[in-house]
Length: 105
Image (cartoon, rainbow, N blue to C red; front, side, top):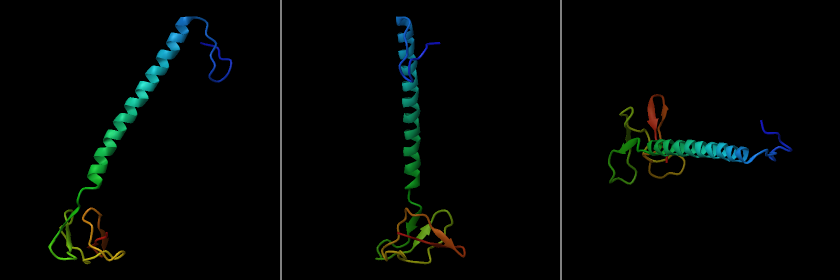
């Protein structure tokens, strides 16, 4: 075991200990970078699924069309967003009220 003077100030006995210390930290750094890289790849895939369209517009040529959600095959009870009074967003999940989907912007 290498004795330490402080928290991060090791006392080196020979050059081999210096080399081993550097090799350990390089291995820790590489392992950390690989783990972070793998976690960000899976996050991108999750985001792609998260923002996929969840519904289709029944008549897209209308100014405020209703939507049919793919998961339940039900049509929304509203034709515009209750908050902003604009078109419904097919990427937003529905909220079910009494078994009927309500769309949002």
